[in-house]
Image (cartoon, rainbow, N blue to C red; front, side, top):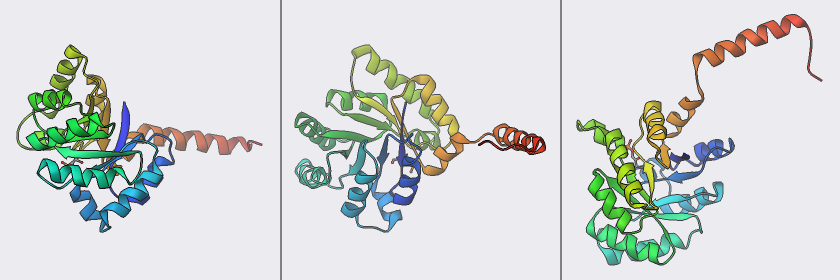
Length: 217
Ligand code: G3P
């Protein structure tokens, strides 16, 4: 499963990229606002920090407006992935852009039927929002299972990008279901490395090592 980080904080992205475990980045207008930076500038900087796809979202709601914004975003770097909302105009734009060789991430997906439409529109990625789905009383992970089943039934190449990930259990369940990608905030990715027994084990080994009076090298 690929790991994307869901942030526009370039320091966090650089730190996680240094682990060699980061496969891409997703942003959205709220994350750009949180960064306090100019959209095009921050996307350009992020594209230089990772080799994988960097999702940058259009804000126009009509097809022509989305195409104009997408053209500007695509000029930034080859690894820009244009993010469009799951609307009629968004999917029309998705079809046109992927037909022209661009990567497209269809966002704000909350049903398996929406995901089916996105795959038919040739989306590179579909982004079901599991956390927000849970928030309103549905089961976000059931949505991921349904999409996996449907995409496998028909051999769609669209990658399932689990978004709105709130905690490590979402990551675990995504991997068990066979999602292609998950995007999570930096704090959730950092949590994945941690286990109290790992910390305890390191402390105990180091304490015993010091008692040996030895050094390596
Ligand atoms: O980037 C889209 C998504 O991951 C947002 O997550 O936590 O705001 O629902 P959240």
